[in-house]
Length: 416
View: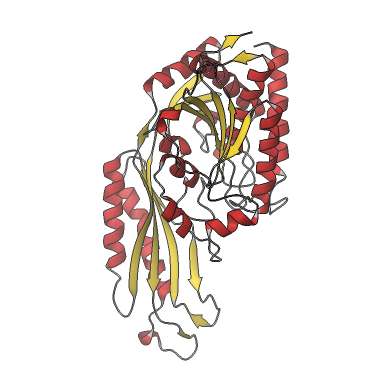
């Protein structure tokens, strides 16, 4: 691939990312693009327009995942999938997720521009609700595709305002009655590009990370029920303050992760207080507990210890409950795909570094159902999930080149 084409790839990446960044409900304060929102609709319209432009056959499933398919010469052959998600956390960045979707779009454009005829279909995918920001749990689009999220459970999901997935989909013109689960036999491989969201590649000054494993993770939702009361007239010894109990639990959680060691982490990122009045003793709190580790035994140990800690406070008119919203085992990427990505990096003279992912990704869901490979690019200052999130388009272009060459190999292209 020549220098001129490389510059063109960079320009296309920057253009796509700039366009997608416009679809946010918090302009100038980061990207906030919740699943099935008007911002979602704007982004998906743009993505579908580009898929059509590159000659792909476009459709959406009953979850709202987007698929753009370049048919292969083989009849009913499994597809080589490339993509990521396009939802965001509140006030997030422009790269987490969209960079991978854009990579897929640019690979499809290169296939079309260079008149490549794949033997196996090339399919670009854009997935919903990976972050779990609106409906909880995370990885919803990919879990739905492979059948880990049942249709019944999907219909039961509601956001914090009580709006169901079906209501939200229909509001932006999506059809929740469309087929949802996909036969794994239709997937030959899945490739995903993602920003690292950490400091390792930048510190090592290496432009590409080849992911070998993804940490195991679980997300718990803890509900603490107490008794509301007047802030001025209820004596301290008569209180059943849900927030005070929650604070005691939360303060002890970091110690659990520290004692477990080996990079284990616990995070409380969301806390809701009811009725949330300055002069009212909190009646109820709901908070999240995110647990991650590279070894499943550590994840299980921490889940057990968190439950023991929580239920130890189940006293003095305080009632506690725990719901597990998500559980994913640590996942290894496909050895043959790892080798292929490293080989293509070497052929292109692009330095790479073998690494593990501390964040969960759609790739970990697909890894039990098809051959999966994943590339990281450096994140400036290791930052992500914030407006300052940024990755160099040159690094992204390097990753696209690698994915393009790997996709040519996996789809067994023929040149006109």
